[in-house]
Image (cartoon, one colour):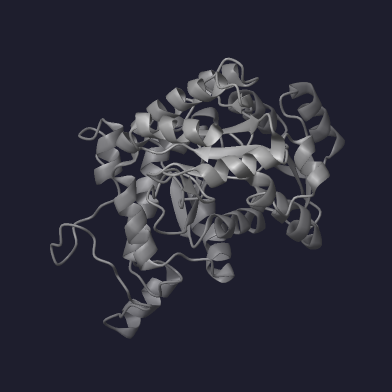
Length: 406
């Protein structure tokens, strides 16, 4: 990306990562090919040895993957400089899903005996990975209240085998927010790797690399794609040698690669990221204010409301509080079920980040696999409703919510 020509985030969304197709197609075509040819035996050898650029096999790489990887890396690095004072360089690896990307992240950086320092109220899939898969590999997650910086540092000291600090902010679905600057500083002091799930915020609203993160993770299924058309995930790292070496090798051997069509859809979706996020965020603020004043609602979790305990942290590190929220109905679970069933326009579905407003019930859906006692400890009660506020007319969104709350 030419940093002298492209100075706006929206321009980077559209142009970053794109290389002129050899056949002069305006958009990068869908390279639906499992393998790629080479002209000579010598050329094939050079490609396998990494001494010549070129594609070999789509589990290893594909032009559609490359464009998405370069584009997302450019957005996470947008406006940032590295330790050398030059524009920050990052390397992304695209995966078939967010969970595939997390698996590569953890298995590419951790080994048996290592521990992960993390916090409560994580995405249900991540929570289950920590509880049901990683322990069998000898990797343990240590849950800490990371709002308490002293408690976090004490936990690191109490676990000398801790190797990574894993952060998800804003977190799913209570919108808990933790302080990236303070926590990453503590992690660096104790030589821990830091990884941040930036799915809810997107690089438009928050850039963890600005605070010194080592890795950033996205479920690209969500806001980056923006239209609910493809599953995907990506890890981005600033240690280029590590990303092109051990992380890439881990990724290829685990086999969690994306596919050309999903990568193509992702690339097209990212082009409208800025304009979509502007509308999402505007609508979300209006919806949050409406819900907070509604007599049927007992609590609203939205980082743009001063009533949220993490309002100050979000204001410090995010450009805008975003478009995700959750809320409690006074009638509990039964009221929540009735509310969802009465919706006429808003979409009843899990996931988030699509153009339409999505409403779901975390306890029975995204966090179904998390034990009830654990869920409630983290604020994920049976009556909690999660909402990804879409881009419809704000009047129509509020009217639908209002009639469903009657």
